[in-house]
Image (cartoon, rainbow, N blue to C red; front, side, top):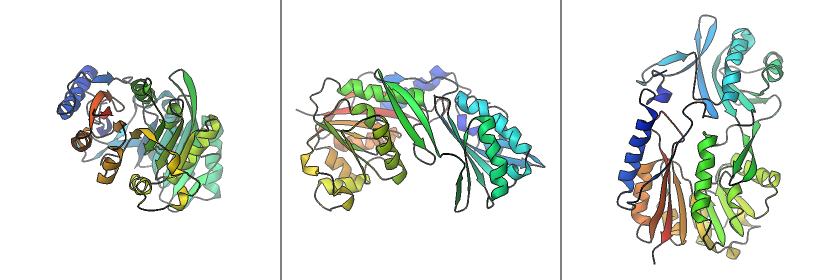
Length: 366
């Protein structure tokens, strides 16, 4: 530990890490918000439910490997304190099985884990060769012995031995929500901080006069499902087919009926709502029936495009979740013309790294 590049701040005390992140976000938000930033910390170990490892071959033996802290080489690892227990309890037994089978180890170059707090674990093994019946036979026994779901991938090939998703259950604002999380789809990496993040948004808007919610970058419904209790109806958009599939299934699983999930990018959503372009994917959606009092955006690191910023600036209340405080600050320069920041928070989804997740609530200026 301390040499792996995935935990570059490991040698610093956790309190110091949080203070550095707080100072960074506070300084970037200073032109728009001068109150104290709320900090949501993370467990300091066993917090990450998603992990990817290289496979390092040395002679006949395989090891897990990661980039080093200087980002100029790979190092093998013998422990990983950041992964949640369902991964930790399986990853080393999986490595033993790989090293005990030429069929499993041959041209294996990576292993990906997706786990849940309910002790489910999905494992994807990545190969530089075509997988055949011999691989399926060797891999099939791992599902029972390790209590996992297993997928094999190679170029233009995906073999699902049983299923390609895990089930997560999170208690959010005193309600239990069930999420089906598919391999390859985006999921929040830290379920403990993710729960706090959703509850923070709910707490900020709970007393508002609410009508309808517009959500962009909704993923598998991470925020959408819990927020469904706060709004009459929700229109949620996402570009990923896989995520929209999961979101619709999650609505059914949780018996939620006031959400309409539509596969649209943020730019397409803006074009549709501004009547610039019609989409067949919206044929069954009555856009004119929506009167948005709130909008939630959770964009990628690049932040919001100009048209989306213009669109959401016409909605009274904005919840902006950001994985890049610099682009958040940039976007606030424009949003600040019509809105003011009423609440701000930092969510430490990625302890021991420089990565910062933050959020702001904006209200229309009166």
